[in-house]
Length: 431
Ligand SMILES: NC(=O)C1=CN([C@@H]2O[C@H](COP(=O)(O)OP(=O)(O)OC[C@H]3O[C@@H](n4cnc5c(N)ncnc54)[C@H](O)[C@@H]3O)[C@@H](O)[C@H]2O)C=CC1
Ligand SMILES: O=C(O)[C@H]1O[C@H](OP(=O)(O)OP(=O)(O)OC[C@H]2O[C@@H](n3ccc(=O)[nH]c3=O)[C@H](O)[C@@H]2O)[C@H](O)[C@@H](O)[C@@H]1O
Image 1 (cartoon, rainbow, N blue to C red):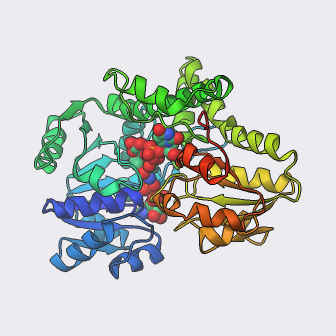
Image 2: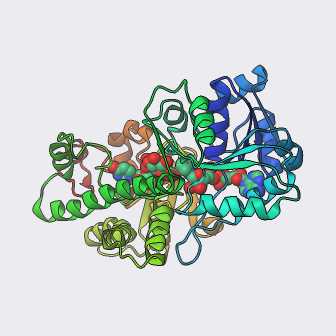
Image 3: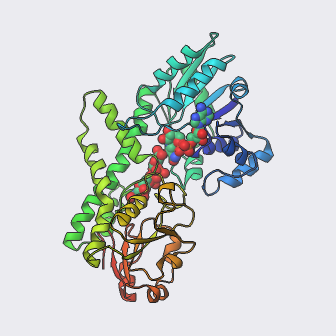
């Protein structure tokens, strides 16, 4: 079986490499020439631990190759994964233009049976749309199936998540497609859920929305903890030990970001709207999250009186550690608010870069945390990079103008920081 993966972003590249590791022959196709050139040379176009070694290994083994030649790639494949982006539109619904383009390309250039598998996160009903788009584009009749196989990997953990998934979900409308996909994944030791395409599509959104709900829930509780002088980390631990609740996704902070939770919760709401259904819980999840980063700013304002002309060091830009992805990162909103309030901002992140709208404005990018902290009136921790735990805080305190830490990820030890002489505040967590 010859496999084509269309779209070599986070999901496409990881999927292609994992399939190569499982022993399949895989081609990665992208319209972005610069990405393909990098991949052909053994370099990743994004930061993701462990993937580059696998890329080099399978370029050498011959199990993987990369191309921008759409027609040939489609003709030479039996199974085609769609892994292109599905960004938010203005109204929150998913923009399917890239998926449509791929479906039309496949329809136009197919030369025999193809199993088309959608891995992009798409609204319920997209499998039917893809089927229609392929049929419309066909110039000669060829048989095909369209299945849904959503992806559950996390950025920063893409390789282990995709190599050792908790489950594989296959939404297929024919036994043949389900069998082919089951065979493809047979060496993965995990439960396989075989269902309808619509159910598979909803499972993906339901999973992300549930995890986002957990985050907004603990963030709401954290606000109450702040008022009551209770440590939210202990509350999370106390409830998380109940297996019905589970301990993950109960870390309070400045809110969830990334390319998926914000867009996927909005898209699910939009689907519900289109079907005259209110999902009020999810409306609240979004609104709590949108305001969450303000909680940290509020604490700083209260402590410093005003942020005008205060020198603020922001540690961490990425929406979470171990990635360079800054899409919907809370840090970016915090920096924009700080600039609106005329603060002087310096920023450090081990890998992420400032977004274009923050380059050439009065934000100083720094190569080390120490550089960002020099002379600062306060530190805002926005991403819990492990390396920030190893900063010599005792030494750094001497170089700060005013030793205040506002820890938006509750990553430092509140007591230790207070013992060193910092004024320390986390989210629902202080000394
Ligand atoms: N990033 C993540 O951690 C996860 C993302 N997803 C979903 O997977 C999908 C892809 O996400 P990412 O990999 O993050 O996107 P991405 O933006 O990193 O990559 C998408 C790639 O598709 C390429 N592309 C667009 N149109 C094309 C075409 N017609 N032919 C060939 N290539 C084309 C783009 O050039 C780009 O390289 C989205 O629907 C997302 O919601 C699902 C699970 C995890
Ligand atoms: O559909 C997707 O793209 C992916 O979205 C998330 O993965 P990801 O966005 O990479 O990162 P997460 O680890 O889920 O974190 C998302 C956001 O929630 C925040 N978060 C997470 C957990 C927590 O306890 N508290 C918290 O604030 C993180 O800081 C981050 O900003 C899901 O976890 C994946 O299963 C899914 O495949």
